[in-house]
Length: 180
Image (cartoon, rainbow, N blue to C red; front, side, top):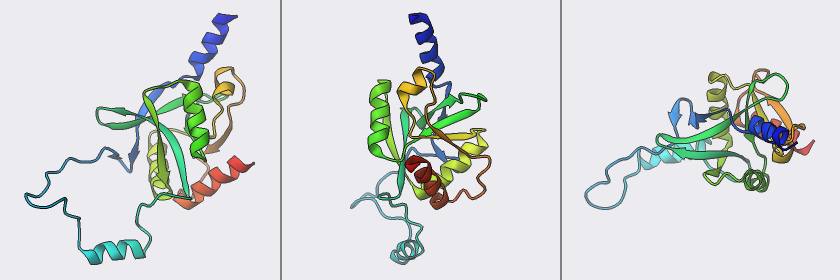
């Protein structure tokens, strides 16, 4: 009996990791030398930053964000990819709240992983990268116990059938699945 539970647990473990990237750019910050006097200089002019804020292109997290699990590697962050239950398609876990992501992480016992908050803008760019990496699904609010013991771990969002990959649309899809 212990053998079959161990086999199920191994099946629930990540099959691979992919870099957490947004449109092909790793999330690790680029190292830059600070100016000789003073602190870091902001890129662009004050007018550029004002224009960016006015059109909503700022990358502000808050009420409309989701969470993923990540771990640090030499080139930045990477996320675990799981096998789907039925069709063995690659799947990533995404969580509608920090609490559910933290609970999953605690139950999994992965000490080298952390929670990563994604804004709607980052979510959109990340989803495009997932599709390019042939990851078909996002598993919303995954249940680690169910995943380990071979039960239904949660509801899937099919990235192949969603045509609008805007952050707001994806956020709403995830929220709708999370709330039932």
